[in-house]
Length: 51
Image: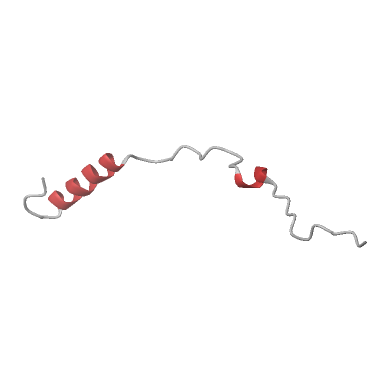
């Protein structure tokens, strides 16, 4: 008799698929604050009816 080898037996390391650390907090200003600054700059440059 021959001994069968498990050539299709695959061991998967599941720890590789898990995230290792939490994403860092975003730095800088908020979207609302940035849009207010852009609207103010547009007003100062002469654009009409920005709001």
